[in-house]
Image 1 (cartoon, rainbow, N blue to C red):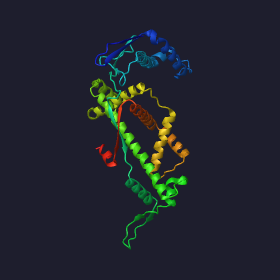
Image 2: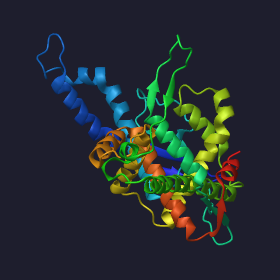
Image 3: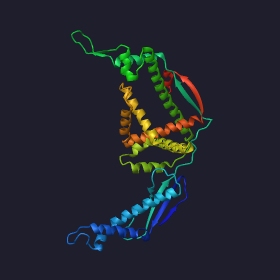
Image 4: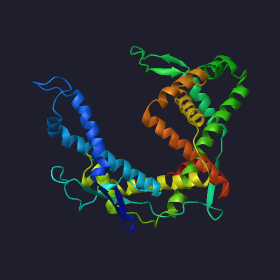
Length: 360
């Protein structure tokens, strides 16, 4: 088999594969023998259908399968051997004519490939990034304590005769409430309870600040990639070819967003190599448990047992989309953490109100 690649031009090249009889003949013969052994046809015993008849009936299909496999394997090998970082998938070249399996024995296949552009997504001390600490106020603590008292309070139904509406009467802020919120290791008095509530708020605010830091890191990286040129026509062609339900109108509307996602993915790949980051199974499982814990907390379940969290997390990870998303989140968190050590971090204390304005 001969494989040739044209010179790269505007990040594009054509890979041509020429397949001769010596490349496929033995495999076609082998597969036709296997077909013959299983073939059943009136007038012939199983496995005794004449080879010529089997070839006439199944030869073209077998040849097509063998050729497709050869093309796929050797095209992929060419990409790997030449360390090509391709975008999307190879696409049949527009000038590729129809393959005539009836009258040809040497076949040529041509594919367009697009490679990733060169870029530098790395940050350094010249990049200033804010790191926020959101103030946890007494007002936040009071509101959360009131919310707990209301959540575990007494439901008073509507009384039409007395003209009263349904309401929730908050429960007393006492040991019974502390136990409902925090379980067996609940604080013993109100002061300790409020201190525990504040600790929870501080942790929650730290997660919000961490999320914001990730946004600022991503913005800084994407700014470095603003002027990186991509083979847009090829990418649009590939997206349409691989998404049957996508229309040209949908593509025109969403392509800029798709291109940004591609830029960010390429940047992450580069940064993971730069900082020698990989994602371990234990990290994925721990992150899934964190998600599970937060979901339970939304329903007021503050002290779910670790075994239950682990089981819930494992069920989550069985879903391919969930697993992929969590792996991506873990990788991004590790990238953001690594960037703290190379960029110029400006620590800022901020109120919740001002912090919220950052997202407007």
